[in-house]
Length: 143
Image (tube, rainbow, N blue to C red):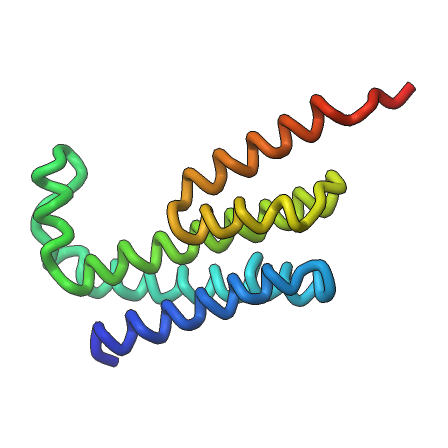
């Protein structure tokens, strides 16, 4: 499969996972299985395949910013990096939904965090952690 086709397929697969998270209030098990397990694992398999096939051909490394930039000049390595982002951000989004449900955080408050996680990864995680902290501070203590 061509790199561009793999990019499109992986992106659509990840998007399906994010859509399932938005349906979590109605179908929590589906969201957990799709976004928290199946899609991240499929993306991880694709990532592993790309790394195994192209890592030894890639120049650069992780020792400096210049080396990282050189590592990502090969299309297959850029795609591997994209799959890495897709898998981990979706996994974090699924964790946010699961944690919010367990801690009784209103789903409508989680949606902006999911959007931020989808677009900006760590910013969404930071927003969700801030939301959790705010919820803990404003809930009455259980005696």
